[in-house]
Amino acid sequence: MTALLEVSDLTKTFGEGEAATHVLRGLSLSLETGEMAALLGPSGSGKSTLLTILGTLMKPTSGSHWMLGRDLVVANDAALTEFRNRHIGFVFQFHNLLPDFTALENVIFPTAVRAGRETPAARARGRELLVRVGLESRMGFQTTKLSGGQKQRVAVARALMNSPELVLADEPTGNLDRASAQQVMDLIEEINRDEDTTFLISTHDEKIAARCRRQIVVGDGLVTG
Image (spheres, rainbow, N blue to C red):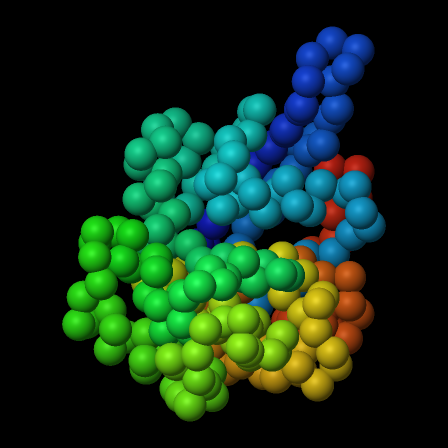
């Protein structure tokens, strides 16, 4: 495996002076291409801030952040937006789907945003992904008519729409029953194995963490294990 992402001595401070809150305190880690890693740690440990920075949605206060040979600390907002759209996918606990859109429209949304319109190629890719996640018969359903597990599978398909090298998943099974959680993790494992997509999964669920080949523990703004 080769290094996909590397951050070194990351700090993130919110506020100034006596009101300053130091969330990351010199955190370093790397992810290899094709890894499936769990991100663990108690609430307030810095996990969410770290995921936000790794997803290029926020810059660190100091430190380095490299991915695919790009220095993302010095990149401007336009460059980060393009990089994120092409190379990073996101799966959230509450899926963040557009309620008035169909499952297919939600999946192809990232590509439609980039192209400025829906294209036949995007629709074909979206249909292919929904078949893969077992939702062939639900493509035309509005997401309000899908179960929680089905919505999360749509979210996984959406995260894969632009064939990203990295998928960041923030408690992707936290709002699901055990059976639906297992289905989502089965899908993630399959994609990781078949497409060599790197996954970093933030979770409090020990059973979910145990399915990942690596566990990264964050505490007090540092990697502690």
